[in-house]
Image 1: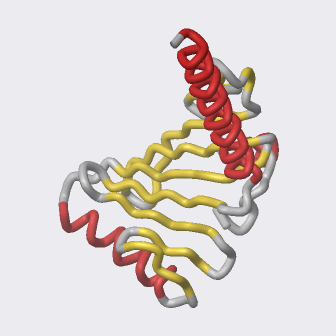
Image 2 (image 1 turned 180 degrees about the vertical axis):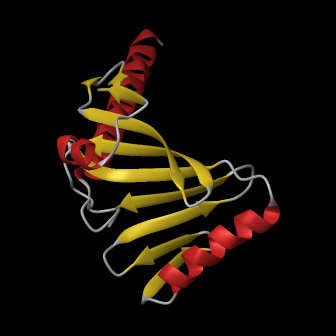
Length: 160
């Protein structure tokens, strides 16, 4: 869960009631071939402890399914302190490690840490409808490509 009062699946309005005013909002990202996607993103600048953090909260069909903390820490010691807090909180509980930087907790949420350039901690709700929708769009696109290749082949065959 994001917090004790905000959980995955929360609506955008519920999140906005509990959070300060977002610094930016991206509404309904459009994909050229697929029309309007019911997708919103809220961006915040907040303080977590002594750290300035950029927070992204992503919604699909008005349900929170992904959020990411981007820390503006520059010192290696500060990064390690944050990573140690994450280890204490999430690695003590039953979990499954998917790769060295991703943990799946008992609720099916994935927590991913990227410390290559800046420190970012991402939380993902795998049970969201977003992934089913994207899989369906991918399958439709692959079918279109195969159909187009088949038509091109038949046209070439007919000409020869």
